[in-house]
Image 1 (cartoon, rainbow, N blue to C red):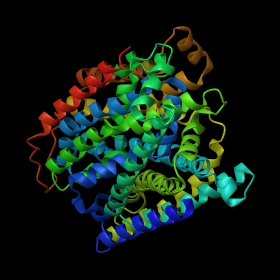
Image 2: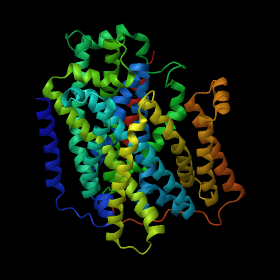
Image 3: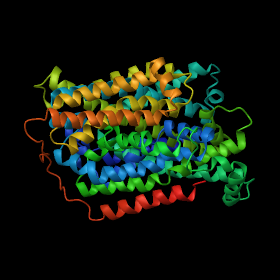
Image 4: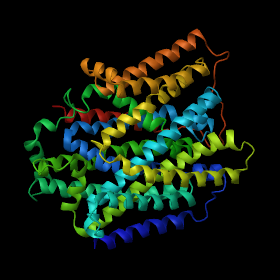
Length: 530
């Protein structure tokens, strides 16, 4: 029954996606990378949500909740504020320029060198960090969720992991190789509905189990009685996400991720209008408010049920799903999880191919290449990157926690790029060479703080939390950029030039919807403050 329900939902999602996108145009850059700038707000929201949700979230964040309690909900709740800022500040500026990639914006704001540096950073990070991590976490989650060792008869875990990675990778290549952004966005939306339903079902069965099958209200009471110190939204200073870090590293990582991360915001670049884009982004924010129910709550229940059984953090969620869901729902949820894995994998591949073709192929390899040649090169580059990721993913075995590793490594390039984007928008006189210096210097500073033992020891001795550290680096970079804008300003102030034919009229309800979302975020923190 598990395998049957898995296959049925997978075939349904693939068939419906093909039917809806069979006539799409994919031979131009705009058609392949931006869906012909035709995406409406439900598709944008569904695509954003599922691109974000994958096993590093479902498995990793629930694993973090299993280890640290309710305070890790910050990664979901604070994201809502970042999405509000994206809708009101960043999106109007990005859409006005008509860009396809964030490095393209940096080229227009600064120069070709800044574009090349950012493009290289994104390519390296996606190829050697993000995409292998997606494949690895996807394989780990799937193996534990449906007990692939028993189903396949493969007893050696490493062999099974490599085989699962290859299977997911090949499926992802087929989706990304033969479909453009709209194909991926439609598939995202279909799987997004399934993921929300499946995630809520896991939360329901988990709460019911915590309350000895007496209902979800009894389960919630049991959680509060059984682990009162872990049901605090503030988080202690010694925890993974203490409350003070919400205003430094946690805020900055969320702002980069939802406002300038190519993998995510490429979905919004394909909006049919600014109003549709804003509605899509803010709807994503509303849906993120539900995130703690299926990304944190199951981890808390897993702690309640299994904390004395020695289950590793990142296996807690898979164990919970396997033990609590009926067989037919386990198969359905496994299919949805595969969709989530493929969504993040495809988003990263599509964004990587856009960065390669527009930032490298058109600028360096073949500047006179046709649209068809550019798209063809992008599709073959996708295959090469995917194969490299399949080879590299198994080497991630042995990491302490998946989610913690991801956030730590992301900060290395998130913070420098975000600093030059936001200061570049706000300060029209910052010179181009300052941006290039800031990006390189930021990566060096954070890497030294992380990996050079004397520096890491000094930060530890000073009791500086890692998220506060990256906040300090961000402040240093911002001060440097502003100082350069005063000491060696560019000759003329930069102005955004409109280069997009879509309707750029803002959505009338954007500010009211944004205010409502922020009020709900504050209310959630106040309700669970210990």
